[in-house]
Amino acid sequence: MLTQREILSTLEMLKNENLDVRTVTLGVNLLDCASHDIEILKDQIHTRISHLARNLVSVCDQIGQKYGIPVVNKRIAVSPIAVVGASMSSSQMVDVARVLDAVAAEVDVDFIGGFTALVEKGIARGDRALIEALPHALANTERVCASVNVASTKAGINMDAILLMGKAIKKAADLTAKADGIACAKLCVFANIPQDIPFMAGAYLGIGEPDAVINVGVSGPGVVKNAIDRAFESDSNLDLGQISELIKKTAYKVTRVGELIGQEVANHLNIQFGVVDLSLAPTPNVGDSVGEIFQSLGLLSIGVPGTTAALALINDAVKKGGAFASSRVGGLSGAFIPVSEDLNISEAARSGHIGLEKLEAITAVCSVGLDMIALPGDTTEETIAAIMADEMAIGVINNKTTATRLIPVPGKKAGDNAYFGGLLGQSTIIPVNNGRNPNPFVRHGGLIPAPIRSLTN
Figure 1 (cartoon, helix red, strand yellow):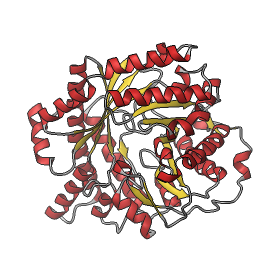
Figure 2 (spheres, rainbow, N blue to C red; figure 1 turned 60 degrees about the vertical axis):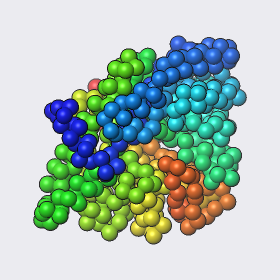
Figure 3 (spheres, helix red, strand yellow; figure 1 turned 90 degrees about the horizontal axis):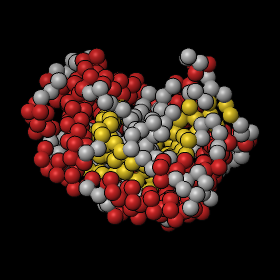
């Protein structure tokens, strides 16, 4: 394993390649804050979070300065609000979202996740109230992120929940039409959601997690790209097995950096350390692109033939390197393909190199799914539900996490641009096959049964 001195040497070597700790996420258990009285519930939520998170930002900044590597985002993830507020109405759920938003602002974190429901096998009262509240909760807050798990390999696919999510997404987009439907950028729909994701918008604190925990998300697509470029400059005859080994070694070093910083933050806050999530998560900044890695590997662009194989190589190498570096690797750990958040991928969508069908295909081997995809504003809720159902099927059958973050942009059509700002970036709106017509398939509802591979006991 790397010593602290070797880690610092690695940081020095990589400091100009966009290596960073993308997020330190504090998980806060709110289950014992539950109350039938909305005022008591809101007060207890506020008190619990403000107490545990009051020093999070200052400690992260202090540790980042100590090691010379920035902690870019400081975030909070809480227990599923559909469980915490199980007795609340949908309007009261919106009130809870406002409290989460207010306390997040007070402690100065970027986002707070956990406005979450777990409905893969059925929809309870609290789940339904939260789903109904989603459009207004996300449209009327700035920092609240939401996630809904609608499928799992063990339970199957809840088509009733997926159809409800199609309606919620359309309404959330309409409520934020002047901002290109940005409320939808804070909402993920999952199959097989992990309980310890530090990245937004999917982060929440699982039912089996401790009272408080620090989870770290480390990124560095620029680091991987530059490592590949240097290797080919030294030896242009490297084969893909050797490139895989190179990515694995790079991922190892980056993971060790993340664990070092996460452990120190946890020790300073006297909170249990959880996991390192090593995910190649891009930003709109130049040199911080997952899409550019594909070009370094010899492809014209992400989306052309060879893309799925290249992504499989990258994802596997990242996971192996991370797992070797730490016994505490968790979350998603792999490669993200968020269209609007990556300049290179956004350009590939604009130029026609990648479309919705290819994006769906590569989710069979990436870490997440259809992420930050701008759709025409007239895409129907049934079509959105059908897109989600397809993505959930990939996760359920392959026993992996998949998700969607779909944004139907009101008043805009395929080929127009959508602007979300900041880390969310911008993107060309992607055409959808049969996007405006009815889709009776999803209207049948019910539960698509779990696959035979779920019978593992």
